[in-house]
Image 1 (cartoon, rainbow, N blue to C red):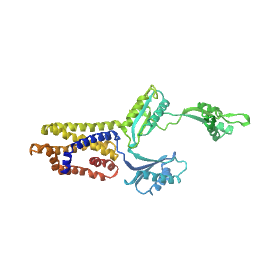
Image 2 (cartoon, rainbow, N blue to C red):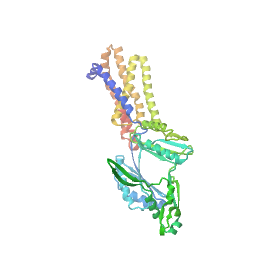
Image 3 (spheres, rainbow, N blue to C red):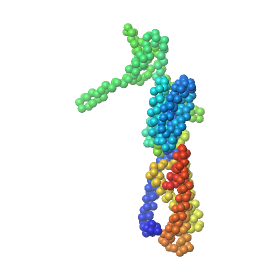
Image 4 (cartoon, one colour):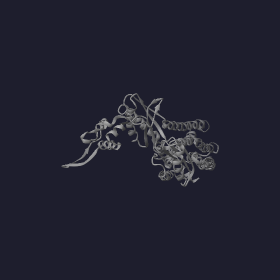
Length: 467
């Protein structure tokens, strides 16, 4: 009772608080990071090892069993599954939900390092991989055209440097294309004839294709750095290097090998609509604003249309997660606007325009408060959060209608003045409204205890409902 009287006698304070809610809520809403999925940790770690040319049985005996033996000793391991194929070993380690995934990854790394000491020396380095939804690709930028894969790759590398300077971008990985390299194809018979080894060729090329720092020179008050450039601008000139000079007769690299300016062996491929392309796979950092990042990437593409991206190259964007986020946010905004309009129209016929507007204002004000709380809690605006906000829209309207309807009843049927009705009406219904709200929240509360990965998603429902 005293609380409602206090509000009644301090109208200016209420107006100021309302104004602050609007300002702070809007700032919080604008600053909330947009994501497609919540940033949750998946309690799985994968260990993959490549051992070329080895049968599945040998892979299991030489690689998989040794890694499994070490990993089993880690505390918190729930389940281990493995697959041994030709030249490839894959181990999946599932941890208990209460295990910190970062600590688990470090323990797996340590155990794999111990196991590697007992494995063959010529295996490739085992890869430890974790799953993080926030680091899944948010966008694919595809480059196509009739300029060749080498040129497409060069343009993609330039765009990669620009994309990775954007705040919130974790990486922009280039997939597909061809990369230039100098290939020295050695004739073994000629090496044997001249008495030259592979190491002789390697040492000569390494020693000649090198920039050598020469210190600095002081002239008066100025200081100049001295540098001897030795890297070849024309790779074909490597063929003119002298390997040996027995009895004053030089033996050139071209005498024992063929030097060509070719391309590296392809390890990745990319196609768009059946055509060869080069793709930049964009990944964002955890908590990054996916919508802002996508807009900045599109701005960079537009600004570099003629500078970095020459005519003849077409740029297309696929898998843009920001579009889904914007559509969902748009649905939320439409839901709020639709709710306000429906409340105003329906209540206008029963309680008049004034009461209808007062009820309708509870919807945006409640959401602005929720956005402020979400910002303080560090929760991003993702699909699950937006779905929950749309879900609780009806709860907000119900509570507001009950209070306003009681104010209207006291004025029309009990003869209360507006001031007295504003104090008495909330007092009468505060308990049933609170109980009704708590009852609805209680329906979401068990989701907090939902186990596994699904529970990591579902726990956002009671969190947002409480906010």
